[in-house]
Image: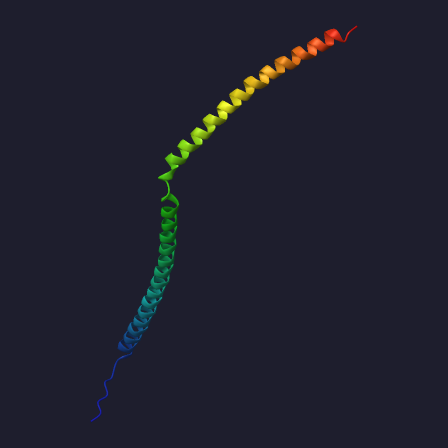
Length: 112
């Protein structure tokens, strides 16, 4: 037995519109899901980059405990350098005074 259902032209048009709208919705959902997957992959890559940056920052700051020790050593070197500078300044000042006195003595004796 073969049954044929007859549809009016309006019913046929409505079914055609419903089918087209259904296909459009399925394609739109597929496109949006594809976009979502693409964006999630980008986010995953950037999360990995941020994680690697944070690991590098942690490695860079892991030796900050040494900063006060190094600062103390640098201060000691600078203090000693200042002492040398002051000492050399005093010595060179005495040498310059003696040199001027020696020159003054020569100029007064070599004049005649």
